[in-house]
Length: 340
Image (tube, rainbow, N blue to C red; front, side):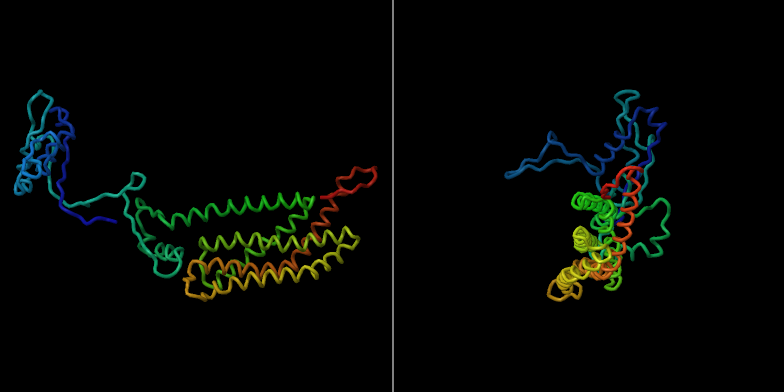
């Protein structure tokens, strides 16, 4: 939004002369404004016509406004001595130059904004391409680049996403501890989260999608889906152990009997995301494709790896729970059931 340069009158006040004559910058500005632009107030005289009133504005002719010597000869009201005037040229220097017609500011600093509406592609890719231009990377130290609009919102989203994910994980952990009545086994369920996040990034790379707001929404969706798959495995294994099965047999039985509902859920969710990934239909898939790619990639990796990784982590956490249980029982006392 940078305005085109136009001719302007530059006034450089002489501070010492102004102090000696009792003149302020407002007095100089008012005198020059009235002479060049004119002044209008309600109490000024008006030309009365039959149907309307026309304000009477007094100012210099256009030829005189282009003459520096005539402008310097204008009188400015002076307080020293009172009631007398001082020529403008005695307290300021005038010259004609060029300058912007409008000055935009951001946080009290001069700013030039560039507004772009991308026709195709992701906003994040466009921002990175603009910042990768050599001239943008070699800016002077006095010039800074600030994202505005959707780019600013995207940057704020990324900064707040880590906090939101952390709070979400803590809330999930608290709910699982209350549901299972154990402290360590809920961490087994949370191990599915990094498995799904890694697959989400793989999906974004394969589909050449950028890390944007829709992909962040896909990550949040994956948190619930991946956690649900782990809950099915861990909950069934704990129930099988309570019924008297050995730990290894309980894990194998859980993977065998819970694999079908897990795979069915993955297929159903993945089938719903395929049209968005491939852009089937009349709607523009640019916005929804990153979300679908993140969800689809995370579903594949979390489903395949959870059937292998979750049983291993379950075994480690069960051993750790047993070790802590023995450590918490005082020596010489009868062994009691300690659940961790």
